[in-house]
Each structure stands twice: as structure tokens, then as C-alpha cells.
Image 1: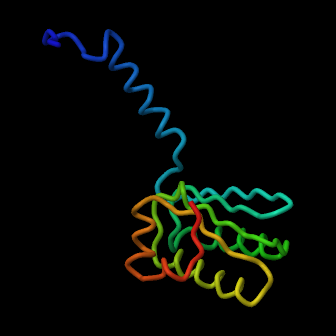
Image 2: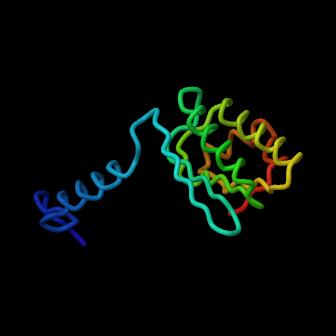
Image 3: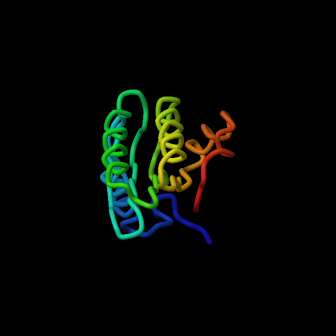
Length: 135
């Protein structure tokens, strides 16, 4: 298949479609340095979904939601890292403390695997072996 120099391989509106997809993607992501926390409860578990960055600047927000979820005494507490773009050592430390609290109480702490850059933090610190991961 050949294309003229002025012809887009995507068709007449190829550029518009690419721009539209790009805008949609950036619209759904939080600004850099922001953490969005979404808490869902059902009869079996509390799920805390994290989107954005979990670091020194945002860890207090996560810790507050985590403590509120723990106070509800769920049988299972799931921290969903699938939409997390970044996590530093303060985020990891918070998860490790939650793991300690879970081991002394009656709830199960489960982490949903994050993207490669987040999972790499667990691997480099060898804490991937101490958490219960799903997904």
C-alpha cells in the first residue's frame, strides 16, 4: 500500500482522531503529584482504588482512607494499585504498616498488582514476597 505525501494513512480525519484519543486519555488522568482515592464497600470487602501518585506529598490522604476502611472492620481489605502511576518508599512503608496491622487483627490485606513501575518498587525491596497479591 502506498500513500501520497499529503495523504494520511489514517484517512482524512486521521489527525483529528488521534488528537481526540490523546485528549481523552489525558482528561482521565489526575494531574502530576495528585492521588485520587476511590473507596468501595460491599458485604465481603472494602476496596481502595488508587489513581495517580502515592508519595510523600499524597501519602496522608491514602493513610486517612486506609484507617477509615480498617475502622469498618472488613473481613477483607483490597488496595487496588492497577491505576497507580507512581509509588515511592513512603507509599510502600504505609502498605507495610497496614500489613502489620492486618496480621494482628482479623482482616486480610490484599493488593491488586500495579503497573510495571509500581511493581518494580516491591521487587527491588523484595517486599513482593510478603504481600498477598491478586491479579
